[in-house]
Image (cartoon, rainbow, N blue to C red; front, top):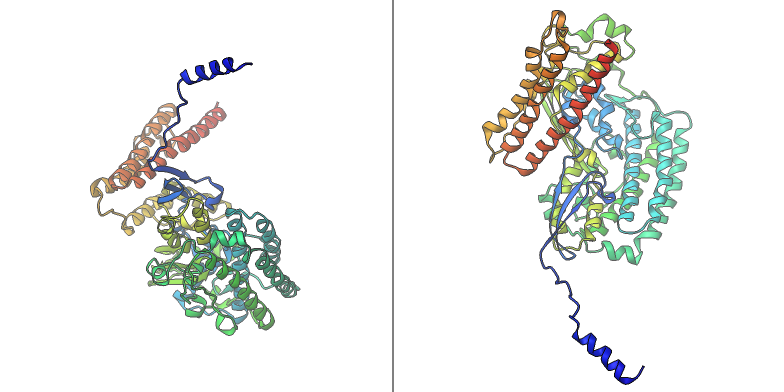
Length: 560
């Protein structure tokens, strides 16, 4: 190819249009993180506003794990409710059981035997270690270190082996009882636990050698998510979040509950207030927990593991629970512990912070009011402030250092009354008992009585919302249930006179309930409450109605 041909090629190239380069957008970008993101530690959703990699705003969205724990508690005795509580914080289950029995114990001034108190302390500290271990592994995975995530399961499985030997279950134990524990420690358990303590101290040293001075780890956590001491107090933070900011506050020292005063241990704290400080506090707390466990195992006294006198519960007069069948023939002791007419706030130092219960008794077997104070819900409030002006990658570091569990964050909602009533009846049938149904003949109005009590005891009216619309919404949802009994053509003994017409009328009436949900959401003058109403209405339309139609179709098939 000669010089002239090259010149011709360049000439043609110069005549072509220049390549178009896309313009760089300078608008803010909104990114949705969760609720299915693996680093969300549950079903947390974050709406993050970004300017490039810089975080401008962060808005946590809750409510994807509502299960009505508080309302279930107000329709159960304390003993019946114990199996439920391990679902709040399912990584530190012993603490949820402890606070559930501590509240009525304090309310009625019940004394716990010394041996039972020692056993409780041992179980609580083992549960604290297990919770911190399962915080450490995912936290390290969030910031890019996968190896510790696999290491932590070695020690955690050993702890669960000890739990299984003592309680019969690995995670959901149902071990604590009012006045003590369910069973004594089995033979050889103390020696096995001492062996674990000696082994675990070498494991902590391994973690510190692997993680604490790692330059990549320090680059990710040091100086990230700083919280000052006064700021932590003003936000109501507790647990490692508070102690990492220079505040030496531990309820085991402050409230002197159980027998923690009999052991030699120190409150672990740091003053920097960043993610590294929170990591160091939790690592040190595991070492202190081992010290407490070793002292408790070596000094555990003899004697009973349960206060047998409290089996002679105060009985509610003229109640079905005191009849001969329930007291002497039933498979389980009658759960008739009467809660005195007073109110109480009880709290314990859980791995994530202060776990409390506000309990109101009404001289009945059910709590009149049961309010849970979860540490994760309170500690999560500060997340939007911590991540502002930080990088996008720092969100995972800060969120992981807070240590949340969505089971306790989303612990409350107003449950569907009919479902609660049906669940109570099914459970009663399985246990061969009728259940404590008092309202109306054969207890058929108990669901309405529970709903009336629920509506009158809650102060949920929003200050800036439409009060009338917000108040009418739940009434419409309840009226739809009552209308089904008035309009559907029932015959003699509530037998459907015309099944075909009854089915269509039921479908029409059930469509009123979503309208009430939407009215409450709209009347709250809050877009998230409105979205919650939309989600609840969609769930009712998508799940409940098709499920009922399936049951009806099967019934029709059987009838034919």
